[in-house]
Length: 360
Image (cartoon, rainbow, N blue to C red; front, side, top):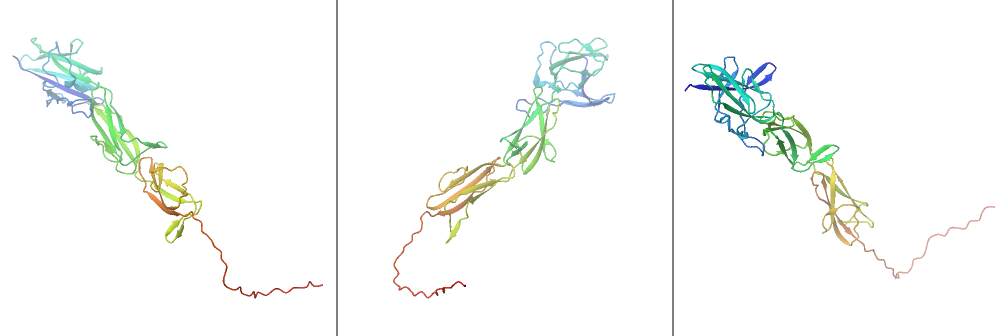
């Protein structure tokens, strides 16, 4: 039996007229829809023409498949783009190689004369074999490839919905963001992201923005064939400032012996402000009541001591401090009495103006 060795070089065109060799080593996917595939066992050798070539073990990618009755398995496919080219080489230690030939799954064998390129997208098989100069033909080998020229799609999904004000998305500091990528062909290999001026890094867990104010999140995804999506970016404004609220009476309260009395007819207004995402709601309560939305001025007309409390919530959920006003309502009018004096009236010593006679 003659000894044969088969070399497979995976070539990609990186610059015009310049070819560099690379080994396609499938990695575990970051997509929940895809499964990890086996890595190719390969050793690199140097060809005479100066191009790096790869001697590939046929155990994982090629298998020991025959041309007839072979089923295509996506789990063992080599993921490529249509820009990827293949070079075939063979050795024969006895009568030497006459020619190498190859064919697509449903095509006819043709002699290998130039790098092979597969343009059609999807899963397919490439059959190849060599023949020596005395007519010995190699048992055909099979390379299973999945051609994918379409970049994955990636999107950023917030856990809590954004509040959009004048086209600007606002979020709370507690919000988190998930990056979701999809690839209908070979599956997602990795997702990358960066925040503000940070270097890009691999996405693994939901993102959390720690800095208040505007944050720029950039993200992209790469599939198993090497297609990368265009980098997307989103400016998210983190509102970590709670609103302020105050209770204002229509008339100032009157301090009598350390207690604040309200004047008759007094009402109380509640004012809330938020300079970031804006006020969503204002809540008030009087005494032991439950909090309810503030819709109009508060009037208290019940005798006794009372407490008015108010709070505000902005559009991303930040809650203000609770403010309160304590007051006393006095609805009892004073009473007056009159009685006869026991003292004698004093003489009126006020001089009476003299009568004057008009001058003639």
